[in-house]
Length: 575
Image 1 (cartoon, rainbow, N blue to C red):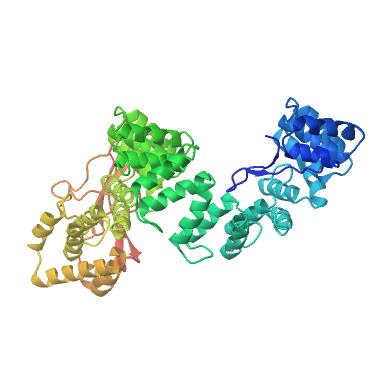
Image 2 (image 1 turned 120 degrees about the vertical axis):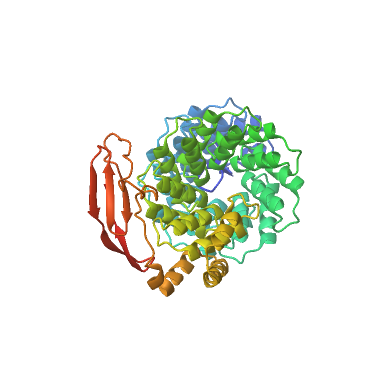
């Protein structure tokens, strides 16, 4: 189509703009409106040949659309140019559109900008809006959000709904103007009230998220439904979500599936992924893993990260497809490369276990770290395990404790158990059976099925504590639960009991707790090309180190202040 169509931009879907129809003869115009293109053509051709710019513009449109004549972009371009050269703003806009979209001419954004600007300077609001788009996208001109806002505003102030939509977006994202959700809501509403489905969808988002307006799910549903009824796929997907979650409407999985399917059939990746999830879980439809895979794949092929993660999981577990570790790795990697923390964690697991790829602890640690840096608690725990065991990274108990602590703060009961074990043995932290008991007690409470055996370990440890120590441990657990923070409570406890706890042995962070009986030197580590490796055993300041070339060194560690434990600790340094 070569009618006045807004170039797709950012949140806006392609918006059809009505072509200017300024025929100078009422008979030709009336014939065109009623679809009598033969009569319209007969009336327009002589006028256009006589130099009537309005007739030339209309004739160009008929060739562009193939109305009464074979569709012919070059012929359309000829008539548009004749009218545009006479200053006809409609023809200038249409000529800009032809250059922007490469219709009848090679695509040329600079030439498109030239003609849009001429039309915009003549007050054509469609051209002003599209010129704003060219500045926003940096097409034919250097990208300049302020210039984009200028042109959007000129058109929006004259009621152009597409420009109002785009101006709302600029305020919502803070591009060319300070971020201002209230101002964004104002412009979205003006466009929505004109029936712009994209603006209605965006206004629904504002209500759903409480941006610029009080959060109101019912109002969000209202605007999503208006846009969805107009066929706006994003709104159909969001309306499906509202039904799936029971937000603003009564929860109804069948209705959710209905709206997801309408959007998915239009190619909406979010809806395709969501519809896949409904089939995978049997919500609103009979459970069907093959159908789930079909929809996940459609969305994943469009680059949707969550769908790539889901499809990887289906191959990982053999649900709806034959189990295939290599295919699982492929999809996990695609999602992980886009920054999805769950996919990064899963990919780390595949490398750690050697599934679908050769086992590679360094690669596993890399992906765990990427996920851990995004506050994925499972990844933080697993990275702690890597440091505790020296897999893929130099063994470092202090670093292990750090990652366990971060995961424990998020309620990860496996990390709470692991951190408790570190305190029990004094690995990377001051040895404290009171803290160890408190953490194991917390882990057991958060792990009712006792997957980690925390309850049994807690019982064994409790038998080693005095009545006073047991009370202190249980008090610590209560504080951890009430504050929902392990770290804050540990900082407080160490500040209160630093003198007692500092007498405990702090084992060196770069060695295992074994090897202190008999030969004080630890076992020789494996040689890693390009890296000097070592293992170190320390009792307080006295340290014994074995290098990968067989050298053995006895030395004394330096004292280093640890602000977390509020005390000096012995630091043996690196290899």
